[in-house]
Length: 334
Image (tube, rainbow, N blue to C red):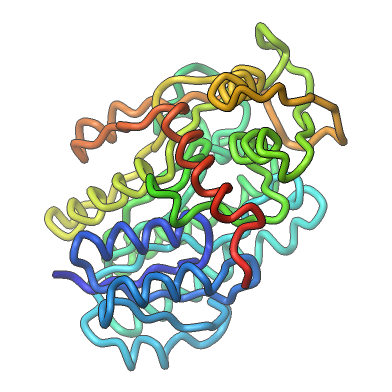
């Protein structure tokens, strides 16, 4: 089975990914600087998959040659590592252009040096900006409205140039809104505080942290933003299929990952209330910058090209988060 590198493997999505790829027989080499990621899930995975998983603590801005020299026969890199807070990017744009653009360029240069030509990149629907039509397909104009979205667009362009000039094969996966945990609740989101709605609503229902409404008032039926919420395991199953496609067909593609449906902020909160039987008090806090009214994915290309479609509902995601947060109310320790 293939040997792959996962960057950002100590983060929320990356740690769930590592578990999934290992469970399917891949050998996984993790890279993380642990600024926002955690070692706990990686130690769990080392115990669970003896000999199949190793990780390196380093920043992707550093010289990556020692890792590529030590780990032979890497077939692909799955690049999850990024700074990803929309409102923070508005306050500190420089951080985002370094961590999301320069770091990606450095990673690609190291891959090229060691003749590793396959990359899967975690991108975002934020590169589309304000939606001109729904659902949003991959041909939608790219008009990011935040430094976060702009930095991901730039990173995509760097990858495309490596595809053109260096014959890289790439799969750019544009995520919509991610939620949920592994179904057994063993690995989940540990951000403190989380900026993700479903996670925060569950934390509020469990009394872990007070729930605040941080979204702006927008032009939707209940005045709260509508988003396409995709379960983190579904998301990573799409990465599995994307890697199989890339290694088999050697064709570069850009694909949206979502559910093709949307829920408003208040609809999600009401779903959590229903499943927990807890009346979550809703208080408004500082309005988050960079939110627009509506984003829903067109996932036709993912279905047709990868043979993938989501299997989990918001209800499933909430249930997995309830297990996760009951086991880890404060997330990972380190």
